[in-house]
Amino acid sequence: METAKFYTLPQLPYRYDELQPYVSQEQLTLHHQKHHQAYVNSANAILERLDKARKEGADFDVKATLKELSFHIGGHLLHSLFWTNIAPPGKGGGKPTGTLGTALEKEFGSFERFKKEFSLAATSVEGSGWAALSFCRQTNRPIIMQIEKHNTNVYPMFTILMVIDVWEHAYYLDYKNERAKFVDAFWNIVNWGEVNKRLEKILK
Ligand code: MN
Image (cartoon, rainbow, N blue to C red; front, side, top):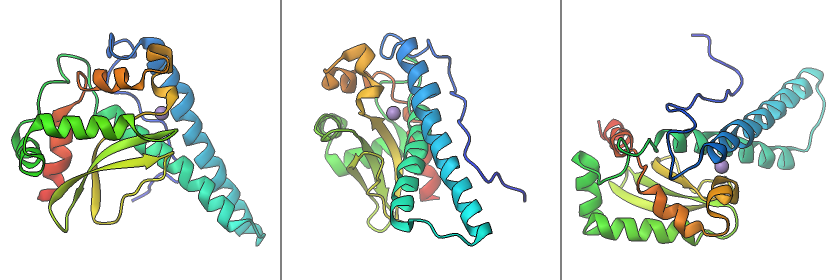
């Protein structure tokens, strides 16, 4: 099978104005078309540089290049997960049900307790980063993680189920410095159906 050799910006599964009032059209458009696109472009530029260096037998700064590459690939992959674990109000929000609802209740005692811990994880990330709900297949436990910049603390046995982007570029136009307000708003647009689907896929 012929596969793509470079990254591409995924289309959003909703219009730019559909996450309002929780995320404005301007905020979402910039975030997707400028910020996410920049990670895609930068990752591809590094891959092209690697291709060229290998073809020419030229040396490059391996440590610096790999660090830069992981930053941009991480940015691309996390944004791709983020866009699909949110959905327009009405379709998103509410409470998780099914396998996910059961797994969260078993781990955290209640959905409210999970929501509180996840919100605290998101609001307390230092600088730029993410909060992620991941799932460890060795222990079958959902685990909340903080991600600094785009460097995931995700190991081979972990799968990310849900993320929230808490870089300032994700919310500053709408919420200024009030990250906690953006995190509150996030709960109205979580796409639980998609998060549940990600969990069921790895439990199969
Ligand atoms: Mn972002």
